[in-house]
Length: 312
Ligand code: RIB
Ligand code: CA
Image (cartoon, rainbow, N blue to C red; front, side, top):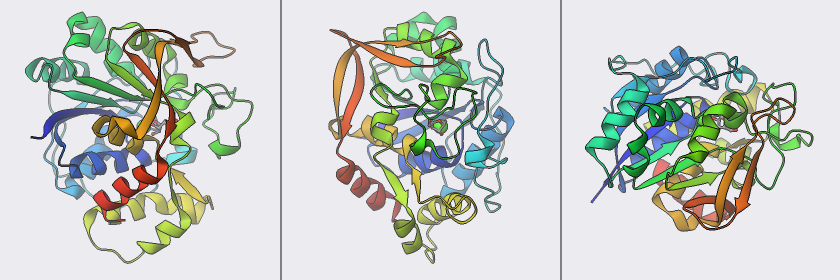
């Protein structure tokens, strides 16, 4: 029996692949997608989400969310995702519009409707979830599980100290913050303090899973919507930016929500720095508690799940 799933995204390149993966897994019924400002402004993340869902044939309702972090100026990542957010992919057109209800309200209503059955996967800055928790504190008890792509607990971050999303996140040594945490640390702190059944999927594990140039070249001529989406959203990264891999940050969060034993975890309390020098740094204060932080990942098994589900 498929479980209801709500996703909160800042559709960008890896968010697009995460949406395709979620829609393809028989474990889930994607019942709502909320959008937030992050990789690109929220008007674009909402439009990109509608475009991606139209392309893969999903009729999940889409809700537009917060356009600014709780207390910061928005930092985006056009150098990674392109100004459009989908790596300059022109193809899919949105065939519908966002719903009237705001994203925070949609999170509350959807979780209330499916309480204790619904999984939530949050793969952008946590602004929408923080607002929803503030509006309705009971929300924390309505999720079956919450999986968050965010943080860098045991490894360097991917946002340089000046706040620009580094052009090649794998070679950043001085950064302490992961992008989603850097963009809205105050929201992340609200979420970390809430009594959510949360598993945090940080760069510690997401940097171990990627689409390599070799894999990408194998799908050059595919025609099915899902592998074609993977090919086209990765094209700019490989052909223009000349990178050798596209990290699968957000798809890993979806896969861990469905198959938690993909990662080993540590338990405790997550702390987010809301200062300015180490803004967005994440730490785990180990101990009891429902909060988990992923420490290692079975990357081979994840890639099998990803490639089988999406025909890559
Ligand atoms: O740091 C990677 C995360 O930031 C991913 O979710 C990516 O889409 C961006 O939102
Ligand atoms: Ca994202």
